Image (cartoon, rainbow, N blue to C red):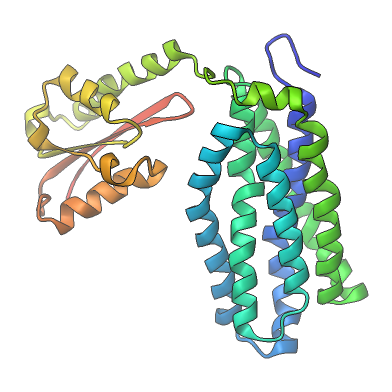
Length: 310
């Protein structure tokens, strides 16, 4: 079902269900399973949590590449493959006897999480409904937020009834039945075609948000009773070098008072400004007491600016 505004609600609701299940199994189930697993195998809590932290790091590092693939090819194959990988990893987890095996399984789960959790689902919704994606993302987030409420007690029950190893095998089957089936059945070829259209961004809205960057930068300086000349270093979100050059041109900011690294690292999303800060501090470009202006433009057509004294 697609509304007059272009929102494919059938696909959105199906993705929301898959997020509920994926988050419940790949994220929240660990909190319950790790205790009996640790008692059986003799692993300490830091050892177990270290593996889970590794999975989260791998998921974050993989998310960018997954998003780019979805942008080019659509999300049907990515989310289906991610669910299969997750199921295999859960099966492997159910058989671990050595700590290194557990860490290896968590690496695979991290990759699968990047292909199946919010990052992938949001990218799919943004491609399916580029002009009305906020409602779709909100719907998915609300239902996905119930994952802990549903799956923590369910996992407790499964572990009590069949043990933690068998519980993981049950979850592997659920992942296949829900998270692998939904992309194949709901993200049909017709929907997939709309998801990979080369022109999916409302250029007027993008440019309007870009135009707001100089304005919000000046608003932040005004709120701090500062002027452009007071700022020692300007940092902009590294989404596109031309966007940053546009802001610099509009405000007459010389290049030597700005820093860019997109040409070296690409778009690192929310990490771009912290990376610029780190580079400036390590390279001696930013000294104690200097003023830094930071301005960001988000893919949700939002913008923000802050100023701080280093």
